[in-house]
Amino acid sequence: MTVPSPVELLAAHVRTVLGDGPFHPHRGWTHMGAVICDASFHARRKYKSTIRPRLIQLQTAWPDAATVRGFQARLATEDLAVAMNFRSPRRVATAHAITHLLVTENVDTREELCTWLGRQTSRDALRRLKGMGPKSVDYLGNLVGRSQVAVDVHLRAFAAQAGVTGLGYEELRAVYEQTADLLGHDRAGLEHAVWRHMSHSQ
Image 1 (cartoon, rainbow, N blue to C red):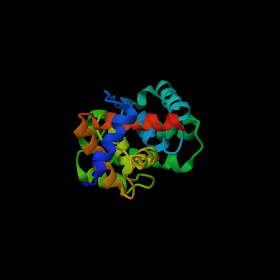
Image 2 (image 1 turned 60 degrees about the horizontal axis):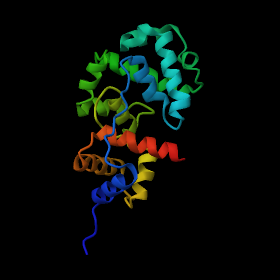
Image 3 (image 1 turned 90 degrees about the vertical axis):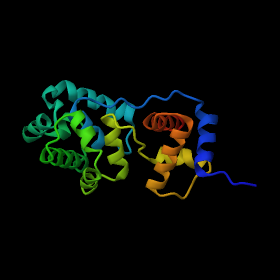
Image 4 (image 1 turned 45 degrees about the vertical axis):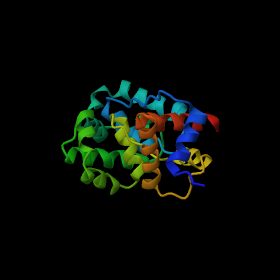
């Protein structure tokens, strides 16, 4: 008897639990201050009730931070922890570090960040920042329209339900990508559908 591959196991679980789609990805943001803060602050927090309202408020309060340089100018004169109503020095420091790197790399807009993230050297530079693991880098890409899979605890739990366990980050990301391709789904759309299902079921 042939043992199903991880992709076959995950694909069968997707069909059973989520159906055939279509699955729409997180649209992300055009406001670069919101993009940077989303990537910096979202981990291990309730997105809908905690992070998203703060990002919407940030865009209203700091309309001139729609570009990376505009956001940097705000950071130079105002307290991001106050603007986000989020007391986490570590996450604030991550936002500052991402901003500094992007300014250094002459990345100012959503479109420029989307293109810049297509280079491995760019991803490597982000990974060297404190607080930016592989999941955060992939998540940042999705925020600016790149169709990627950012593997978090929800995606790991869903894969485990399918019988797919013991894989490293990049291995499991590849399984999700191949599953999306096999089923004809947008990769980021499948990721968001799994994340939404698992976050609502807890």
